[in-house]
Image 1 (tube, helix red, strand yellow):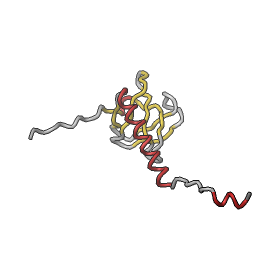
Image 2 (cartoon, helix red, strand yellow):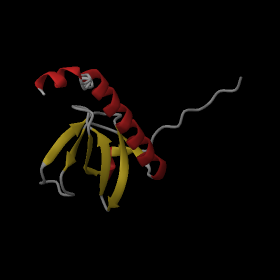
Image 3 (cartoon, helix red, strand yellow):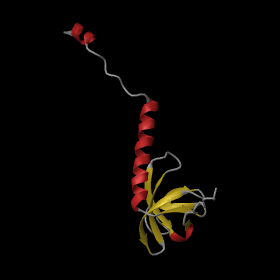
Image 4 (cartoon, one colour):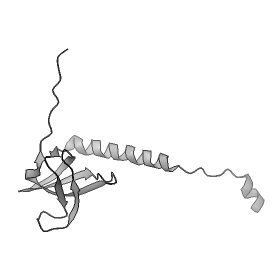
Length: 112
């Protein structure tokens, strides 16, 4: 029986690069779908992403200036956002103060 296993085809495992490429593709699809139905904003300054809509809550991470986030919910002075972490490029959610977000600048198309 042991020798018969040697004749069976071996399973081919994905390489690390193939897995990373697949993850990036899937997160790209997720981000596109999320943006289709939601509004997105750009950070106007370095800002903290909080776990709750309170100044004294846990800081999840700090986002740089001109970082894109997708709005999920608005609660007075706070906005619940979804974004891809600048550290590991994984999807995250958290609360950012509304005053730290700007609407995206539209690119003007020139006439030819």
